[in-house]
Image (cartoon, rainbow, N blue to C red; front, side, top):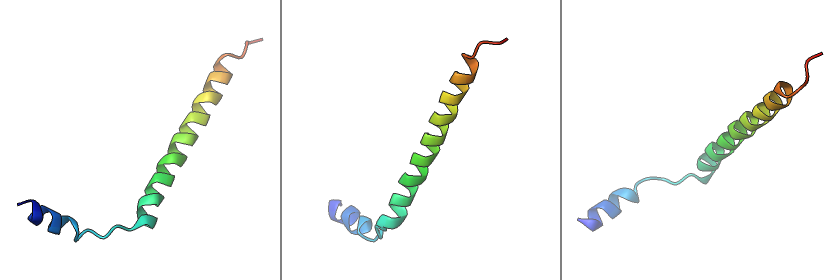
Length: 49
């Protein structure tokens, strides 16, 4: 049974370019969200005239 699962898993082609592209996209999303959050905090702490 274990060999059948192992044989089926080997059919999946690992494409490092595609896998890394997803990680880069997630990193960009997290970075943009963090920068927007910091900017929102900076603007909310500003004293009003």
